[in-house]
Image (tube, rainbow, N blue to C red; front, top):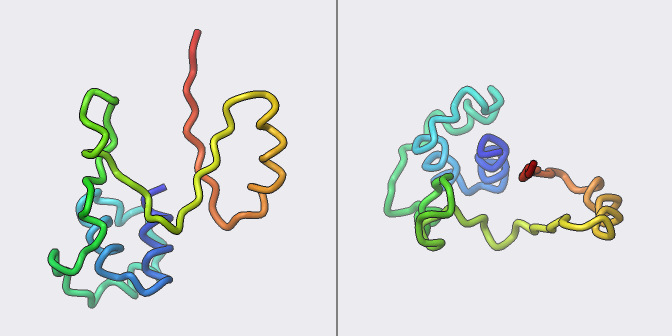
Length: 106
C-alpha cells in the first residue's frame, strides 16, 4: 500500500513526500522501476516533506492516534463494516486504488 502511495505522490509531482515515505519505510522493492527512476535524482530535504506532519507508523492502537500515519486529504476512505455497506463496493471498484484492511475475529 505504501508503494502505491509513493508512486501516486510521485506521479502528482510531490516528490519530496514520495521520497521521504519510501526511505522511512524502506519500500524501494515495492516501487515500479519507472517511479524509482523518477525519484533517483531527488535529493531528499526533510524540511520540504509535508508528509511529516504525522508519523507514518503502523502499530497496534496502543499509541496516541496523532502518532499514526494519516492519509493525505485528497485520499477518500470508505469503510465497509456491515452487510448493507457491501453495495458501496460497486462504486469503489471504479477507483484507481483500493486498499483493504481486514480484521478477523473468531
